[in-house]
Image (tube, rainbow, N blue to C red; front, side):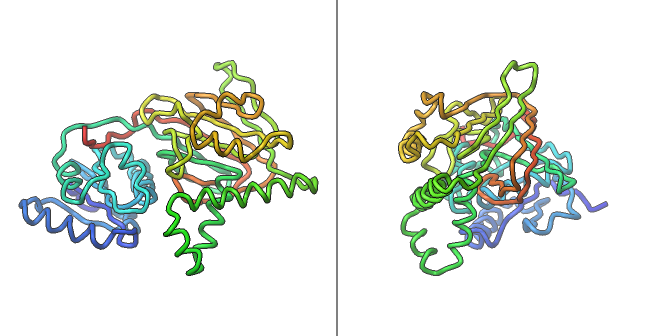
Length: 319
């Protein structure tokens, strides 16, 4: 069995600031004499590595953190986790007050004593014999289609430049395109996404079945930095938040999008279904569909099993 390190640093050299962050971490460790018992590993090199004894430090964006914690979860690791933001959005790090300069983030990640619990949402699909994690947010329907379009279009230098200029507004632009496509499908009576959600019987919540514009399963309120589909969600409340937007020809999707940006869409009860649950959930779709988890499209499936593992990890936080 591989030797266990005291502190393991998982980094992603291909993240937005991966190379710079790696150099800054090395300098901080050397300057403070903290190198003993510290091991570095790239996010793609974890297969034969054991969880550290004392602390795991992850340097990267939200996708890197998701992959690192999924590895730790599979190894049944329980050590506290320090975060050094080095990606594009860094939403999870921001939730713990860690959108800081590298030197400040290192001080907290390696030496901080404040810890906050983090609930973990998990999902499984028939196509895979593994459990995947949702740390912040996941979606089906319009938002996952937006994610697919973003990844496809950013292969072009024009769209990459435009996305860089627009920032998080890029997702709003793509959402408008997707709304136009949805309306076109409805006018032509083409099949739209249909979904069935089975809630735990002990919660006395009727199951949902119907045509869906968007499905969100969240551990925190926001997605994409400027939309608030699950305003009641918290990272440590022992609940997962479900928000479903029904497909509806009689309602303005643009109005729904504006209200989603403010988080006041829950008043539209004839269009929006919202429920907080301890799970588990069973989701069945009318067709195989791309699934967006923590900002990345990981797979496609028509069947999902969702569950909650409350307070599974401890994050070293700024306060």
